[in-house]
Amino acid sequence: MKQKNKKIDYSKWGYLFILPFFVSFFIFSFIPLVDTIRYSFFEYYRSGIKEVGPNFIGMANYISLLGSDMLKYAGNTLILWIIGFIPQIVIALLLASWFVDARLKIRGTQFFKVVIYLPNLIMASAFAMLFFTMFSTNGPINSILMSLGWISERIDFLGSVFGTRALVGFMNFLMWFGNTTIMLMAAIMGISPDIFEASEIDGCNSVHRFFYITLPLIRPILAYTLITSIIGGLQMFDVPQILTNGQGTPDRTSMTLIMFLNSHLKSRNYGMAGALSVYLFIVSGILCFFVYRMTNDNDPDGSKAAAKRARKQRRK
Image (cartoon, rainbow, N blue to C red; front, top):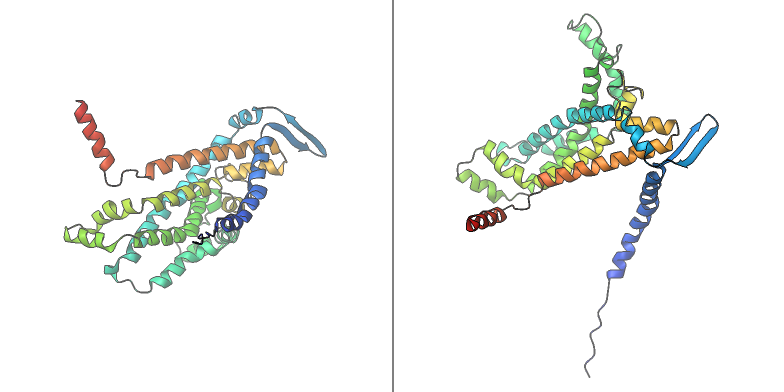
């Protein structure tokens, strides 16, 4: 008699290993998310020792936020994100292209990688305190400029809209461009060297090779970088909070959406805070969807476009 082959099923062990993640996600992420959405439809706040609610008020919190300064703070958040992200992605692309280009023969690339990544390891709060001290009216930057004779009066960097926004954007750039550079380097190193060699044989220069070969082939990593940067920009809080002492000075031009959310949490207005959180969730989802659609190439070889053109010609 032939003995039947026994098959061992290991799939149950896979479910067992991923179970802790789903349990922790359900407890610490999913339940708070549902609770936040639920509170957004209620009037729930404290006035002194008196607690009001929770009373169901429907969409009143959402309508009230649209009539507040939320859109102004959204514009501030967008401006601060653009100031930090544009130089970040440009410098990261340039550095990544230079470091992986074997023809340049750059020495000490490992050292440069460590140096540019170090600011990412520093806490944002410590970074903000450092810049607050350096660029204050009586700080070392003003002292150095006056000792060199470049200025006659001390500059109030944090007292001007341009100065405050520039400092916030510069700090975000310094903290994240190293991480972006490392990711883009890994993406470029994943491109087959044969493609670059073939382009050189065809007479392709460095600029054409960068725009027509490198950028299209690292599009997935660029999409990931942009999406994570958008999410991080919407969550911008610690740097402007510490730099402006939570006031968004001058004239609330550096007040971000999360700082606005934090002010509602301080006043224990949980209904308004929940509604603002839902707005942030929806906006980030929409922006990430559009970025993914714009950067995702569903027709890398052009076959779908060619077939579509052929169908149109046959119909004519």
